[in-house]
Length: 117
Image (cartoon, rainbow, N blue to C red; front, top):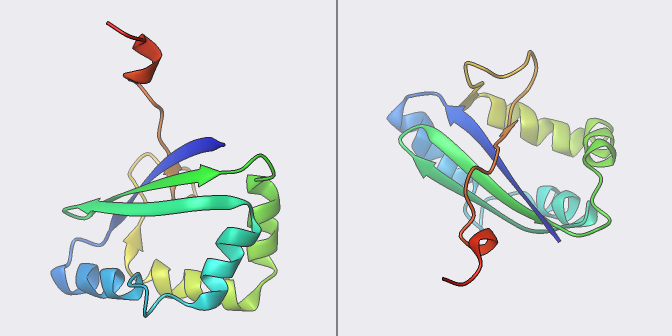
């Protein structure tokens, strides 16, 4: 299994942030979105927030292929509807590439890699 971390900002607006969080509650997230995530080989996904900054932590199985996931999402009208809705709340990080939403984060420290003291 591999772990991937990404960052993204929300519009700095309390109402928009609350609405974004509401859409991510278990009772509100669209089943097609969850099915798409699972079908791609993503075994767990969590999103954390501080202020308007988001951190997504994703654990993916060996079969996960980000290009295949992106292609499948691009060809799924329901996922595209979800992405359009989420775009109303999100804003790209200042250093994001054109059209890039979630920006991969680089791990700079791991306690596990230090071994036992």
